[in-house]
Length: 389
Image 1 (cartoon, rainbow, N blue to C red):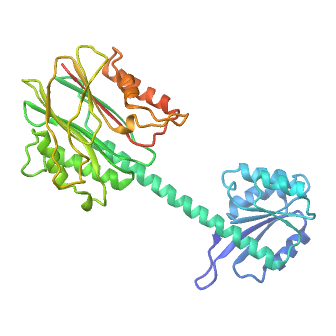
Image 2 (image 1 turned 180 degrees about the vertical axis):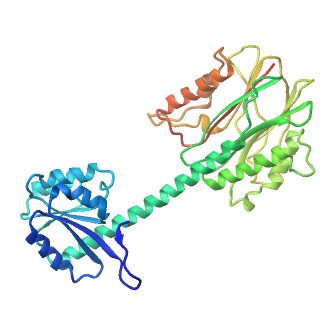
Image 3 (image 1 turned 135 degrees about the vertical axis):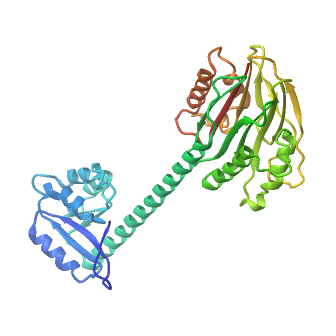
């Protein structure tokens, strides 16, 4: 809290802490500010008790003498700024002289203002109000940012809770890595058996960031997972994308659109049928070759045009093949030098290492983060790997 609470009907007071070893100065400042109903002065004569007093009072501004015994005033400014509970509180330094060098040092150490004592009461009150108002607005802004961060964290946890469990055995093995961006993007993905012979796999990316993008992504994923697309055969990828395009138009989704890659593998024939709506191509590695086939099809971003058509493609999957699905947040990253990674650079990074699937996913993720030069990404990182025995 940065203001003191008072009985109903009274004016909330700005809590001010004065630190000055001279009781006479403390009394003079008290009298100067006593006529202002919105200011409440707290006095600390011993500078050694200044920080405990500030932690107890929670002032929205500190008035501090520059010359005091035992603790130099500039040193006390450093102490205030080094303390987590006082580091943001505005400090007005009070000095007996107008000394530019001392003033410059005070500002460099974190003081917000500098006054020659004792200033005019109106000027002092005006400066107190100005700095206090800015401080309170900063606290309110920080609270709003913290609330948003918690909301984004909760949304990211919710999205992660809906992602499928890895498939560690069987004719199709699947694993994934997901890193939500600092702003939370709209990535989601899934895979499941539609029946005993047809296995669906998909990855989608809502264009934009925030809770709205995440919720739309979850809605689409739930529709695919539950089969809640009426009059649609989920075994026909182009029909699925056409239905999604009609079900989630941008004018009903607050302008949000999305890309998607959707495929269905027939277990007996090993035919993979797939369609794409503006999404990066899936990468298919066969015969131990480090050069992948890029599986894509004709189709625009989903949700833009109601009569869009989505091309259907197919490919027979040889045994021991490896398929990668991913969002563009995996490779559309800026390196420390400012240049963006190219898709071909990413393909080289994603080439098989000869190790296990999990080792490859972790290796790719670490290489991408190394290329980025930091642990945070501007967009969601989503990658799913399928291994067909």
